[in-house]
Image (cartoon, helix red, strand yellow):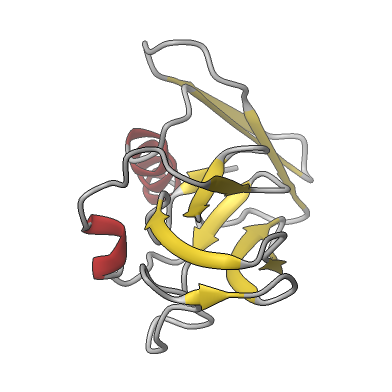
Length: 150
């Protein structure tokens, strides 16, 4: 069963994301489904063995994510999984990459947390980061662009 605070955190997560549906199933058979009245997006289903709280809130997004967006130049690096985007290895750390930074194929560029597992995401491209498209703590979908690289 979910506590009132759990439900409030789930609602906040949904409101602060680009998702329209958030469905969470628990190992004890309880489930909660939240929907926004927005354009259609894939649902996210998370399953836990015990009543789980929402992921810990992240520190404010790095300034790189707030800079003026590039003019759709370059290629994007997309999320390989559904989960929570983290720009840095911990709230106290600097982000893995910032706008203007050169990256090489195989460099760790962010973390996407899925099912309580921290998945380091490596760059598929060589180049320079021109835009960070996700904010720290955002729920991201499979295939959602995270970075623009030229």
